[in-house]
Length: 114
Length: 114
Figure 1 (spheres, rainbow over the protein chains, first blue to last red):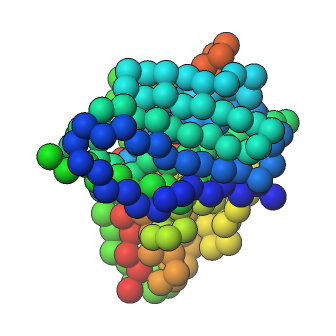
Figure 2 (figure 1 turned 30 degrees about the horizontal axis):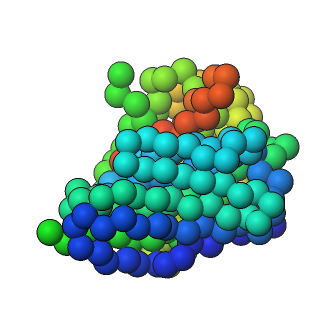
């Protein structure tokens, strides 16, 4: 059974700092991996999608990497801002189950202070 | 284009009462999902529907039923609510086209069972 773990559970940084959020998964046979953002009391917003054949994806100040062989992904946030404060969720979709759901980690709650 | 909508936003039930959570998407997506989110547990899949007319159990289906009424709508029913079903419920739909694989989430329904 696929399990997704995110470390750390919470992170506080001053504005301007670069930071890395970590995600690990137990079964490397994944279809893709996605990073989401969730603001308090809100739904989830998709940030980045990495297909199993890709190594990384970038969007603005965000860069996500994928190392399937080691079962790891990282989300790099450059020059953090207070508006980046949110919970970041990593999720994988297993290969061979394209119609089934994402399996989520429990998230990292990020707080960026000004 | 409203995306994924959920009703109601908030609900309080007494133990044993029944209710249906409604979800609709206007993006013509085939796949739809119901998750619950609990503190310390992350998002867990309740049921999903890979296409109109099909539904399948997820990780935590006990105590719930679903109906894929048509391509747009996917409802979740609690027949006899229990305090353990106090949670935030999210509906999602999935867009797949070429290399795109994006999951869109509704704003959630916050349910309290007394």
